[in-house]
Image (cartoon, rainbow, N blue to C red):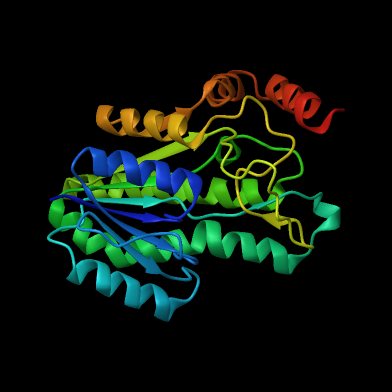
Length: 252
């Protein structure tokens, strides 16, 4: 049985991906801070893990490998957002966003690299429209997602000789925590809780699009109408894209 490891596996998109993969006959290992709502079954193993804690991550990876015949897919889904102007944020919160969105994913990729090479499997990074385009009041978030994309796009070339595929999914707004912003004093919050979202998708719709892209072997998977339009327009006319984004997101 093929195994997928999903960070942020207790969240809306993580749960949607997990359910769809299990329906396809996969086994999933879900990593998250709070797994109290998750059950362990023959096709699901939930492990509590702070991905920014090296010891906890190492223990979780050891348990994952020991319990699996193979690791065939790693989905880097864990992340937070920060909704605040740069002039209202500080260095500590900026680093916090990077620790979770970028460095935790890199540490996970490093730990699971040998297993994915063994299986000839795939890495799937969940990025964002903010990973290739600007986004108002999201300087730290956009920077972390740009870094994530740069890492995995470069890793793609390095892992190709090993028969390993690297995919990047870029959703626009996925409604994973509607009406539940839980925003901290530093502006950080769980993803999918923004009040300025546009054309929001359900986690299930986003997961279905991501898995279709994975099936097709697409290196980049824009998720949703806004993401597809942003991908095209930002590449073709970045100044026009920025002006439209500012008008729609900032209201200016």
